[in-house]
Amino acid sequence: MKREKLKVKIIPLGGLNEIGKNITVVEFKDDIVIIDCGLKFPDEDMFGIDVVIPDISYLVKNSEKIRGVFLTHGHEDHIGSLPYFLKQLNVPIYGTKLTLGIVETKLKEHGLLSTTELITVKPRDVIKLNSVSVEFIKTNHSIADSVAIAIHTPIGAILHTGDFKVDYTPIDGEVMDFARFAELGRKGVLAMLADSTNVERPGYTMSERVVGESFKRIFAKAKGRIIVATFASNIHRIQQIVEAAQLYDRKIAVSGRSMENIVQVAIELGYLNIDPDVLLSVDNINKYPNEKIVVITTGSQGEPMSALARMAASEHRKLNILEGDTVIISATPVPGNEKLVSKVINQLFKKGAEVIYGSLQSIHVSGHACQEELKLMQALVKPRFFIPVHGEYRHLKQHGELAVRVGLPEKNFVIADNGDIIEITRDSIRKNGTVSSGQVFVDGLGVGDVGNIVLRDRKHLSQDGILTVVVTIDKNTSRIIAGPDIISRGFVYVRESEDLMDEAKSIVRDVLKDCEDKNITDWATMKSSIRDGLRLYLYEKTKRKPMILPIIMEI
Image (cartoon, rainbow, N blue to C red):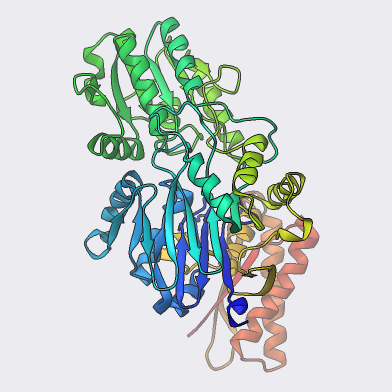
């Protein structure tokens, strides 16, 4: 009987009801296994925030149980938080060769490389821990060396697919390990967590090879320089650009910091085959005719500081767009980036470049599974319980329904939220409480020092501006000696609003006179009275609510 009481806890701390900051905790007895540790880029209303990372206070409390972080692949939304995580919890990091190669570059920047234990694994390796073992299984994705992770416990296996697609003709020839997934399915998988990103798309995701064919077609026609923007991490894509360039006898230059870093790591580790004679530094481009040049660059998402955006705005130090250039944007805009991308495309057209983008030319394929591939995964693995992950709420809901259509009993899937504790026994799955989870904001060097209150203030300032009121009063009599002076920033242009300002000053005087009459000398009360008096008047006159900052000086 005792055995039946055994249970596995699964706690997603990020990656649910959002795209990004993926981190999942699997807990059994005294072992905690962490799968991935990613970041997310800020929403539009997070003014000034650089990146968003998960709240790991639950892990800090239970640090003695943590056996390591196990990585599925090297994308930012799965590894980006590691530097911040490792400053609080120094635990071993497990990952495949390329994933750790990218992590290394990241840790170097943060000065953490010498103190971190990195353990390289390969597909089908099994890491034995105290009460569970962790297995890595080969998958395909838009970055090489991607794996799914199976955690074997005495009551059954927990399978996390990681981000995946089914590609029967991958660039490196390494097909997903269907045999192992089917084998696990036969033995029985207790629960599966699967990627929901493309659940809304019917059919199959096209093979990466399709893109290679498109590149060759475009390269054959292009007259001037070819500039290709893509994700730095998509090494297979870069390999295909290289092959097309070599086919038409073009030299290759790489632009953008992340692109340079990853290309270097991929060449060193043997994931990219480039003839050294073909590679050029950006400085030497001008030594060759335009029709002999290909530039691979970052900026496929229109990010304002990326190499492509700087070229489009003529702000790049070394590369300018010339008439007759062909620019290929080999990516689809991440939701929310559409405007940025179209701005860059417009600028490129204005410069006289030919721009190839969108789905018309098959220059991009997704790295995530569409409906038919998700069904295939369900059919192979046949999990008893199912938790859709890696998606917004609508994605998770539709993925749960898709699993039911493939034969999963309706009561056997759970749509969770970040922080939910999901308890799984041999024959049940349920939510049982929550742990603290949420978002930690990174702004410059500050981690977590900007909270919701500061963001609210930033939003307020961005919408209505600020009004600073400076008054000098006599220490003994509390009478006004100088002022009130009013300084406006982002609220109204003072020179054109003199009447408004004069009236505001007289309100401040009246308020302070009232305080004097009532013998109020407490600064906090005086300040709040100034605020209240001005707020009403300014709203009446302008229908705006600027932030009002009273400053009182005593002499």
